[in-house]
Figure (cartoon, rainbow, N blue to C red):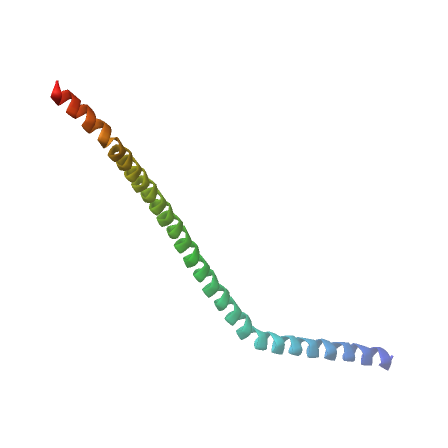
Length: 98
């Protein structure tokens, strides 16, 4: 019968040792986990900032492309009108001679 009591005592002691080991492990890992959570939060805030800057950059890029297309069409139209100038002058001169 003493073997049963010794086994129960050994089991209780092992449970106590397991609890102590778990408490030590939790105490040592808690600061590490907190630091990791802070770093993850910092990384997330940086990613959000990068994402908003990327969106703003895309909007600015679209505005620049639109502006370039507008200026390109304006210059093209101006060049076409300049190319027509000799014909318009010839017609003007003909109309003045009449």
